[in-house]
Image (cartoon, rainbow, N blue to C red):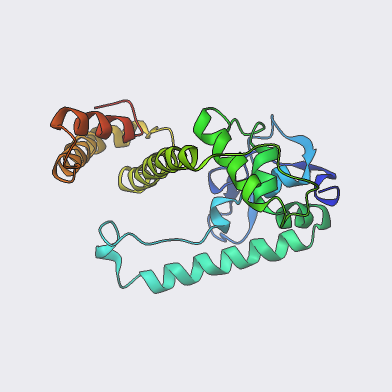
Length: 233
């Protein structure tokens, strides 16, 4: 933990949208923007986030069905980027140690920095992860947070719902070419709106069709609205 907590100066939002490259030579970086919030933080804070170009790509059978012939080349390119990012981080010893810190520790301590501990579900899921790994992590004594079987069952239901919402958000980001908060470029608004409304309609219909036996139609609609990640209906 001490090694992963050493200070490091990092870019706050090191993703492709903030990286400019030469139009004739994409391998040549010409500039980085959005530096105002750059800060010195413990290395594990930078280590909890992977830039979008360093993440492996998961194809969607519906969204990517027309690009099946391109998928091997795209996947190969993404894999090379992920390996390049892993190599670059290994050349920065402080960052490398921050990345290698057990994620159950790094996510818990970095949570407040990224405003991730915003509700009971987020906090308690992190605490349960620590409780389960307490001995394995070499922590002394007994974890001060102790959860009951009944509470874990309730929490698992909340976590499943949170994960469903997260998957829906990622799907919509790809389907609508929008940001995680639903923002789309002005020129894409008109063509995207019908797709958005149709996707929402299909989502509600799916929730109604697959609702539990003891769940009413009104309750199923309420669940659909609760899991839908954006405000527009």
